[in-house]
Length: 593
Ligand SMILES: Nc1ncnc2c1ncn2[C@@H]1O[C@H](COP(=O)(O)OP(=O)(O)OP(=O)(O)O)[C@@H](O)[C@H]1O
Ligand SMILES: [Mg+2]
Image (cartoon, rainbow, N blue to C red):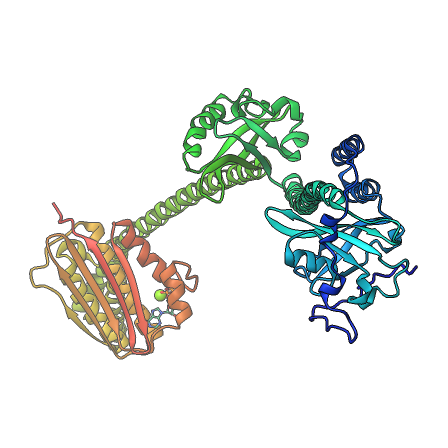
């Protein structure tokens, strides 16, 4: 006997009826079941078979179909018996044989086409059928040994739908099926139905178990991934309930800080070791927790402690975690230790503070030095002025008076010159001229050192006198504009203005190359403004920058002027281009008392 199925080569197409195949009615003999005298029912045997089946169903549902086939064989006293089920994977195009007992047992796994075979006929007619010599119509049975003498097939149903058949076969005329066999087969058909359903559920359970274990494996992989991130992240991370109970804390929170999981898990977050002895942080977190549970976020730099007692600083954040529906399911505390950063910042701050203090002290020193320097130069200028005034007076009062006396003596000598020769008279006359010239020079020198007009008649007269002499000596035409009624001012102010004009004109003569100059003075009740300008070549940008910044070291004229003006609380400015130079000063007016 071959182990291949009689109709195993079936396809989905409708099976053609082979030539010479008998019609179905020719192989059906169902009415014989009624005609034959039924054998006596053996209820005891039937009962014990059903009990055995029920036990098999409970104990090992995987073998139930084979037990059913064996039972069929036994109770129907058949030579072969088995179960045919409609295939499910192709939508029921064929029958396959999951269990066979008796001589056809090697055909387990074989089957027949749905639309051309005894099982299909039974389902089509929806009733038990008795066949004889099936190979006469279904020729694919012809090679199957031993051939079918009689075959009794009964359909069975699941949820009202026929899904298969159970069958018993007699291979010789020694065994004839009757109504009692049909009754037994129908009764066992309900078992076939239960067994089928159990197997169906088992398949479904196995399938969902497979799904479940696949989903579980995926979930486990995802959890492992997130766990790895959670554990290996470089920030403190935890999970807590909306009430603040710690559910999880990563390695950094525990190992690095010196705490154990059992010290913190299940406890209110703020009561854990991190916040012990940091009552302010503790209170803040306790107050923030209900707010975060309502959907807010909290972030602050807080003090916390390691288990060894050292106080640290953490940039702490507490945020709500929501599910897909937006419901808050957990709170998520995170943090980064910023102790080192803050220490470095503090060091920087202290360093900057020290530096600032040093700069402040140094600035004060420099300011003091420059004040001292200004005071020194003010005194120097004052001494210089006083000295000039003294020298001028000396020259005028001493040398001037002596020369005047010599001149008077020489005049007297010349008047009484009868005893003198003409040469002697000529010499005396020459001496008188020399003495007069000398006297005039000394007076000019004395006046230039300190014009007496400045003290006696004031700035206006002194400047007029000086400019006249300057023009004569230098050949530079100077235009003087000054109010007629320029009031007398304090001696220092008048001297300063006179000296600035004097210095500026000397500079114009020495450096500008200009043939003209203008001196203009304006005055109101509060200030006097002086402007001295020329039309010369101007000064180089470097010199101008040096003078403006006070760093000019070329000469002392400019710095002397500036110091004089500043010493009196005034302003000093120099403008220069290739069209000329202008000195501008402005002084507060203090009229002389
Ligand atoms: N009117 C001007 N025209 C062009 N250059 C000028 C004029 N006044 C001053 N300078 C430039 O400014 C420089 C500084 O003048 P400052 O009076 O300070 O010094 P000085 O005249 O060179 O020397 P000192 O006045 O000490 O005898 C001069 O050397 C000159 O280069
Ligand atoms: Mg000068």
